[in-house]
Length: 90
Image (tube, rainbow, N blue to C red; front, side, top):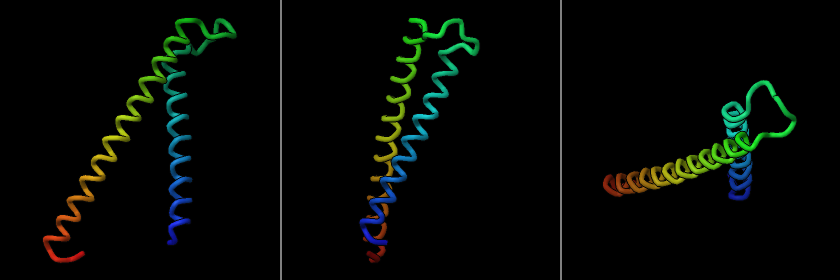
C-alpha cells in the first residue's frame, strides 16, 4: 500500500473514531444529566452544569486513554525491535 493511501485510511479511521466518541459521549451525558420527561424547552442551570462536567470528564478520560495506549504501543514496538535484534532478524 502506498504511503498516501495509508495516510488517507488513517485519517478516515481517525474521523470515524472521533465521531463514535462524540456519539457515545452525547448519549452518556444526555442519559445522565437530562431527565427523560422534559419540564421546559431550555436546559436548567443544573442540567447545564451536569453536562459541562460530564463532557469535561469524558474528554479527559479519552485523552488519558489515548496517551496510555500510545505509550503501550511504543513499548510494544521497542520490545519487538529488541527481540528481532536478539534473534538476528531485522
